[in-house]
Length: 515
Image (cartoon, rainbow, N blue to C red):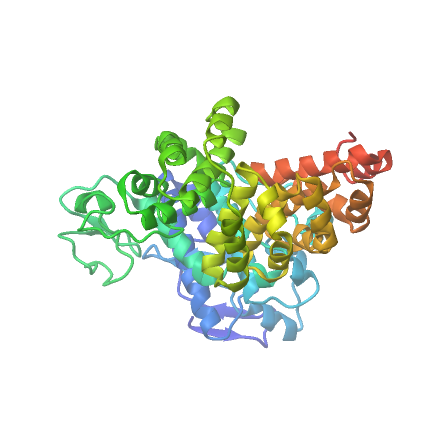
């Protein structure tokens, strides 16, 4: 920035000439430019992070305010104008930036979290080539913002890209993805965008996309020493080989996780199957398990796994695949279920103790073990051991991952009449309603599932759920962009409507379909 004035009307900034125009115009010029979309968004996020580190909020972020310089770098403009407009005699209509604004900005000034939301709207705009809610009137856009509704998933976005948008647009600003996480994810997307067949040991710089030869860690074009494309794992040996120690985490590819199941130690197999189970609730990730021929390997683990945990969690993965993708078939799945014995009382007691004593990281493993045990080989041993109180407590105290799998466990337990009553008696319904209203899309979906189970043929539970204001949020969830939350919402609404015809009419009034 060369200079600025806040006393003129209107206020202005003086910056270097961006010869390639704004990002929207730049992307529309050619397919080659569009291939750089994620790299430019990554660079914009870096700029936004720099502003935040200096205590500044952009407050007016949209694609026309991301410029592309002569060097091909994304540069932010119009930063600080939100404050300048507030003290200037001239004011700009807020409708000019309405479609990129976070819901909370209808009532208060922009924040760091609202900048993250606006960046997500820029991602949608860059992908489809038009502003968010392009065909809606301003009043309709405001209504969507008040209800926490975001634009529909663009056909051009894959599921992983859309998951990032969802994480960045949570209606509760405190639960939105941190900008550091957004930057890491955009960096990976931009690497994939620029990924080309490797020749002569070359790689590409993430900052300027220049070729870097001979495994250099410094780009001769821009001097960047960070963000170079890593050598592929296959060039160093298979996963788990002595040359490539495998560290499993949520970023490990499905292919590598499936490979670990084939031959690694019990500890690595348990880590891999735990991570595979967590990706089963993402449609595109679950399909990758099928593509990597993972189903036969999971079937073998159910039959021959060396620990009870391996057996039930492998069966848990197959349960999702069977229900959603019909692989394996229902008959094959039931045959597999019968090969695993129910958990012993000592095992159930250990699960309950672990849920109360462990760190969050270890609790994820335990609560996943619990939901697989409840969902695949019987609920009674867990119920008799007293599993319901510690599970309900986790609804209040757990992080997002823990609450998702806790709700899955409660949904599996709620199929039993005694467990259903125990869940309600522990005060779970108000907490489930809170997750339905204010959670992430995945949390809202799993909350809908448990509420649906609790409402089945139970008038008192259904009344409590309806009086708690669930119906508008369940109907809204029917417009979810991923299948599992949408299906769970439909299941819950069907169960509620079956109890009372008046509930069906209320569902219809809120935009659902009467049963």
